[in-house]
Image (cartoon, rainbow, N blue to C red; front, side, top):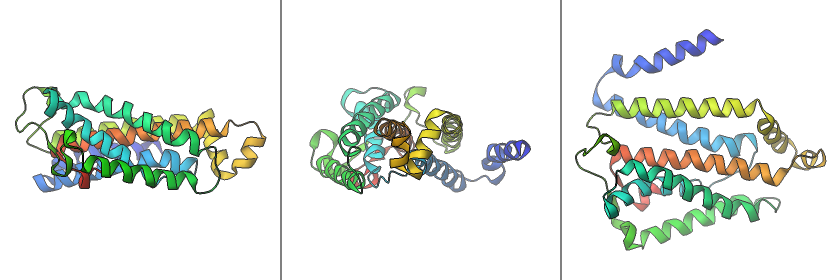
Length: 233
C-alpha cells in the first residue's frame, strides 16, 4: 500500500513534464485546485455530514483579498492570502455558532443565504471593483507576487498545498477530532449522549474547512490574475 502512494506521488511529480504543453499544464493545475477545494469541503461535509452549500463565500473571500491588497495598497498579492483566511474563519464562526445549535437543514440554509448576500454585496461595492472585478499585477515585481508566465510553478505549488492538506486531514482523522466528527456524522444524538462536544467540533470542522477553501480561492486568483463576483462567488 505504501508503495502505491509513492508511485502516485512520483506520477504526479513527473506528469506535467512528460505530457508537456501549456494547455495540459494549466488543466492539471486547475484539477489540483479543485481537489484542494473538494478536500476542504470533505472535512465538514464528509466527516461530520454537515452539508454546506455556500462554500463559495470562503472561496470568493480568499480570491478577492490578494488582488484587493494589490489594487488598494500595492502590496504583494500573496500577503492577502492570510487575510482572506482570517476573514473566512470569522465568517464561519458567525454562521456556524448560531446555526449549529439548531437541528435539520438550518445550517445548509444559512450557508446559502450568507454566500448569496456576500455575492450581492461584492457585486455592488465599488471598493472591491463591483461587477467589473479586480486585476493583479501584469508582470511580476518580486517573487512574492507569485505571477508566473507558465502554469508549471502553480502546478507544483498546488500539489504541495494539496499534499499538506491531505496529510493534515489524515492526521486529524486518526485522532480525537476525527473520531468525534465521524461519530457526529453517524448519529449526532448518540455522540452527544456519550459526551462528545457536538457543537464545538462541528464549528472546528467548519473553520478548518473554511481555511483551506479560502486558500484555494487565493491560489486561484494568484494564477488567473483576475477575479469578479461571477468567478469568485
